[in-house]
Length: 440
Image (tube, rainbow, N blue to C red; front, side, top):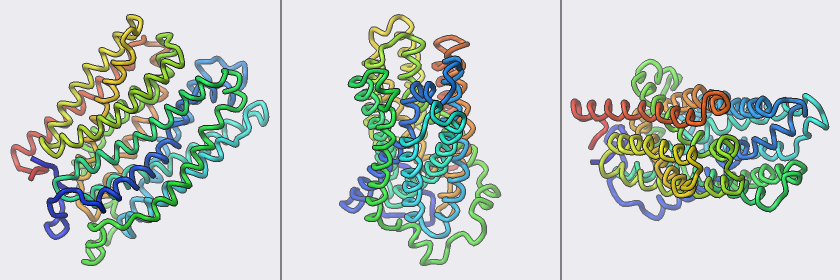
């Protein structure tokens, strides 16, 4: 049983294997997405040096780090703005244009962060500049991720949507692996004083260059067949696409926001924040923390592909249910081992990364929740608003809870969001059983 994009028969791609053109589209979209995602997430890997450099020296370490997490969270708060605007034009004028614009808007501020003066140079202007550039990054990523999922899903043949979206998601998460490897290399080869002096700038400067490479790569992509047929048939949304989303697809919005909460918690807590958390809360050495993170990020990429394959065989609802339950189990196993001394940290973190690959099910569910004329706007609104609410609060909340509410607090938070996904998957199964929706 497979997942299909709910559209009219005239707009549905025939069921076939992925061809050479499909694979080229996947590779170009994934590589460009990986470079852009690297630009967005590398910020948190260097949260500790940024907290020292962009705030007064007499600021308490926990408060400085909390302030950096606040600036990190600002990028999430800005996502709905970029997502809604880009999605509007993506539904009206084409997916490809916005797909290219988003990566360009990411490259510029990333490069600029690498050139910023620090607090000792310009005082309070330093954190304000960092905040402004982070907001621009948020605007860019707000259009990138939903646009990437829509772009790839509408290129994929029916019956291969789950795998195609998962490959794209795996490509996006490869940006996390690149960022993790970069952080691991810098922390291993440079002394802490060197990292503070200039080493922290290197990943941002590289990210700016990577971003412009991604802009060039996306010149070779073509418009999606689904949008091309919509335009040819003059079936594009004549009204404001977002108005149609809110007026007639509230259920799809609610479902998409629910599963996005699990996605934000899994990625933010278990992949992006954990290297810093295990150093501060469990005394894990920086080299070991970032090595484990690199292994987990690799496992995440493999896990995404595995869960995408599973979606096309057993359906998105079952894949989400199984993955969410397994994720709860391994998260508690990982944190329990850390509390006991971390003897099995590396293999458990690798398994955790693989099961975080459950997030690859999320785009297939969201693609199926909205019809083609308003798909970009529907996904972008639900995903970015949810990410703004949950992503912005998660970074600061986990940073606070780790200091004040016990070392297992992050695991409890991830478990709560996974339970929400379990409920969403059970609702999908009940809906499919009752009405045959979302199934071939």
